[in-house]
Amino acid sequence: MDSQALILKAEQTHCLTEDELLHLLQDDSADEAIFQAADRVRQKYVGNEVHLRALIEFTNICKNNCLYCGLRAQNPCVHRYRMSEDDIVALAQKAVQYGYKTVVLQGGEDPAFTTEKMVSVLQKIKPLGLAITLSLGERLYEDYQAFKAAGADRYLLRIETTDKALYEKYNPAMSFENRLRCLRDLKSLGYEVGTGILVGLPEQSLRSIAKDILFFKDLGADMIGLGPFIPNPQTPLKDAPQPVLEPALKVMALTRLLLPDVNIPATTAMETLAPNGRIKALQSGANVVMPNITEGEERQNYALYPGKAGALDTPLAFRDKLTAKLTEIGRPVSTGYGWHKIKH
Image 1 (cartoon, one colour):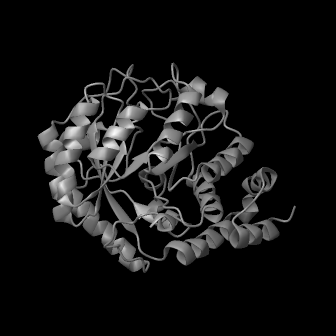
Image 2: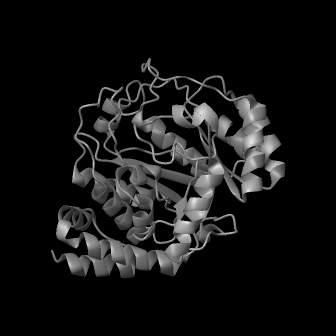
């Protein structure tokens, strides 16, 4: 296979086979051409504006024991916290003051946040005029239905890997089929659905990553979050090789080529791995940034992985620095809600 011909095919048709994706994933010499093609496709389909989503990490308590995650239930070193409803709503009010149009409510799978409690939170935030994204993990269909009725617009639930054996190895006591069920339920209820994977998990194959990208397309995902796997020293995968930015950047760029109009964030994990990692991602297909507006100790205690970029910044200082960087590369901050363009 000829890599340049495959990149041209992807840019023009947004279709590649699993074997063609695998070839490009294996060819490191094609990386720069893939990044440039993804940037052109991004500009053509979603424009130069960058959509900012205000992230509120409202609880770091989780019932699960995912082997790669610093918030896993069996990690005794985490200082646990759980915000009150009033605290969550107060941060959403600050998001409006900071100029955000979307708020992302993210937490571990915390049993204390029942359906009724989350509905109450949503009903208090929706009148603020914000689009609301939830990232609460696996729930029943009825829960997702109640959240949608209360004002939720989007839902983030990463598949992490479409390799069933690998998924269930790294997510003990969880079911791959249930993960798929959740994503299908969310689609059927009319959410804008976000999913994604960790790039660089131990035992992850490049072929499985090719399958992951095709899964995003088959699902009809609206948002794709792709982060490099960064080992946490307080997890069973602490001795995994330290990652580099380029493989995750490449997977992100290939995803842009195949799903030209979706929203793709430049993730904090990318910035953690490399200076200006977030800017590199925005120049390789990404069009979204999710600034963390969580305050105080909670900002440091939501530690999925070590060395999280921006953890010591204040929310307003972070936005100011980010806006300046975006201006330097000719990427204005959007004043809209950043819906998936094909949907609206």
